[in-house]
Length: 200
Image (cartoon, rainbow, N blue to C red; front, side, top):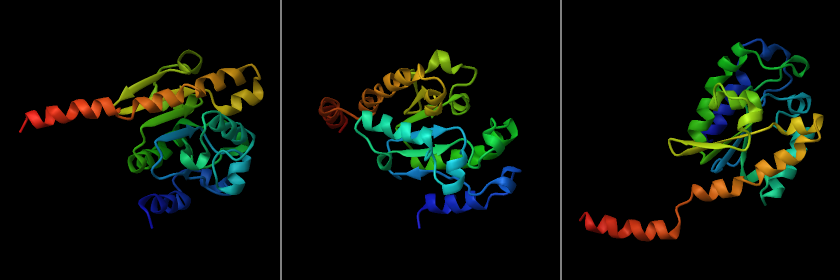
């Protein structure tokens, strides 16, 4: 049993806030344990609460389309949310809920150690881009401690505002070049070797 599987059990058993009383299922997250990219949404919706899986409703279908756009499948990435339980009526997450759930996301990211963290929507954006607005920083990246943080609109936004669909697609198409930045090029390796030899 992996450390991530152990963590899922802890999340499923969590009773630290009132959301546990109304949820059908907790939604820890899913995907490749060696994923280079982690997508972080806001909170589970109705479909996710029923299945215990992230992004399986209409927004999830659009996310699958976006992944296909860059030649990827959801099994190759990791997908989770800031909150692990559905807020009643799909209301916005409360600050206390975000704070309580933060430990789970921190531990997930510590185990996954991705190269890129993609924030989907303003609540996950606020965690990694504090004080910013999604309309200003979507499609922009920053690097910190070897990780690239990249902000995008939530796929659900395109379901409510069709004009955002192309914006989200365009932002998604930037991800392959960001991923390429995280991989050392053959040229880099070639220059590193003589440097290492010169130290001997």
